[in-house]
Amino acid sequence: MPVRHTPRMDIVIRRAQPEEYATVGEITAQAYLGDGLLDFGEHDEYLGELRNVAKRAAAADVLVAVAHDRVLGGVTFVPQGGPMADIARRGEAEIRMLAVAPEARGRGAGESLVRACIDRARATEGCVRVVLSTQRTMLTAHRIYERLGFTRTPDRDWNPIPDIDDILLLTYELALKHTP
Image (cartoon, rainbow, N blue to C red):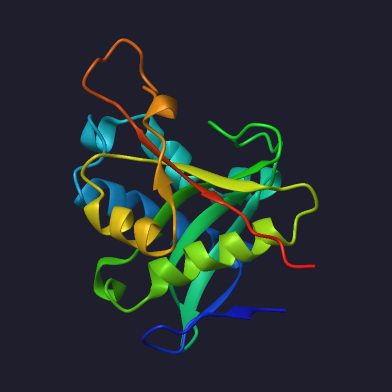
């Protein structure tokens, strides 16, 4: 059943369908390229990972934000212990690869996707925290995370490419409050 979060427009969050994988992959790739988040542009090998939604969907939950039958963006939710996790530890879920199409930004799609991940984490038995990594320049995403209660965890910041010193991913966490 889709989860609705509608800060500013009629957005439905649901699991991505296989016929949407190419669209979600391209939105993600173009968001990272357009925002200058890939060090090597079109030649960055991570670009292939961003476009490979089928691989992500086989190992995690790929969610999409849809309005009027149009995919606006997507996110990968990694349940605790999932193979797609970069930084999650025992009892933690992880959010990865959040991206919204440029023309849909500022309408609540990104926040709705993050809220849906939080809801999924709360529904996961034994999950006590949601974690994520983000680049320094992703300021809009930082504002979403902070507005939703995430806090910085500088002790967990990390470098995905150890040979390149200027790439440092910032980390955030949200402690979950479970209701009985």
